[in-house]
Length: 283
Length: 268
Image 1 (cartoon, rainbow over the protein chains, first blue to last red):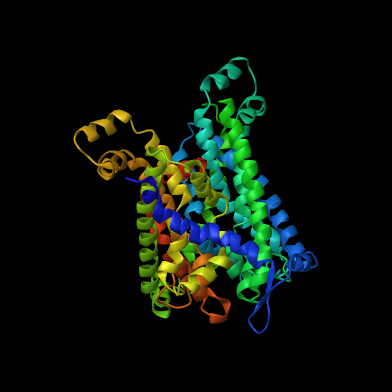
Image 2: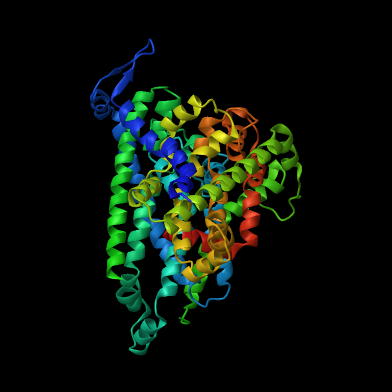
């Protein structure tokens, strides 16, 4: 039996939908398609145009704020959830269920539900404001609030997913450490700060890197909530790629933007594998 | 471990209720008349009217069928392709296996989700646009599945393989009778993650489908709920509940397996 024969079916599909598209992305980013359908080599011209494209910088900065807004908060919440669920608290099975459930919902369904919270006048948030006599506010239609709205929703969706990694890590920790600290009379906060949290550091780094990678892929909600608006205030790189390719039909520029995304993801992956390798060495 | 302050317990429960609130709200709105969408009263009558109207206004039956076919097609393809490839990597020593394996792992960092532009071109070139196969194909050779199964296969004891060989089993028979049964927990974990991923997937199916015959539920829901269709809110939530219900029910039934599978999947 030849090993290559076993590999063949998977290799064909991997080549067709991963390796070839990566190379094609790079190739297409160096060409433009003329109006008559012929394509011409333009070198770095598309990249030069990209650097002058204000929207490109806008979505990149948005990606940064989106990551900064969602990741530290959801990691902190995830850790808190895991610490609670890991304890012999009454109803811990229910707590775990409540925290984890948003993870299994389709992003598009989540977006639909939250869309209603944010709807002006009629939506839940504005009804609450009405109770306090505050005027209605167009949450998703205002550049100042739209990103915050997206961030709150994504924190809700993701915290429970990160919780399970902390839960797994906490279950590996020896209970002796905590008991010893208790015997020594250390306060709970001190024990957490000086013992538990440092021991969870590898998990925190692992979750953080994955969360950053994930933040570049999460764009489903934009399609129905804001379409990247108002004035690109909520748009992200992958959504901009989608828009350029399928709304503006500019596949050469879409390839150029994709190349940037690939470079970002490859860099993050190198950080991730570099870090994981190190961890394997130390164990 | 047991020193939980009562205030902490209260905080944990408040957070849990807060976390369930958006979902609870969706169910409230779906099962009550539109007039009660934002007024919460215990006397509000329960109704299935929203579901009936959603079902009649869009071909949700067909969308369900498409999603089930899609999820089944992806999973079947993945199980066969990943099993064969993982077996090759775990059991055979061949020239170039390290390079081949790193080419597989490349897909872990650059997933088909971000290669939408070029993959659209390829699917169009194959003449597969607007088919369920178009949604499924890029995901079938899953690097994640190959990686996970290879790890599991490597832990299969050599004695079992030798015993099977003595009985005259060929390589494929060994795979089928020794490796596959021993990897059952891995298969279950992988299947749960794969099914929930593809049940929920949206952007790629949105790009390659444009008719009722191939659209999965998520895309159908987005088309249905678009503001320009003017469908009222309670009906949209009913459709939203329909979209997430099957997976949610499976999750509630197999909670423990789900959480453990996601954990395995994430840690790799």
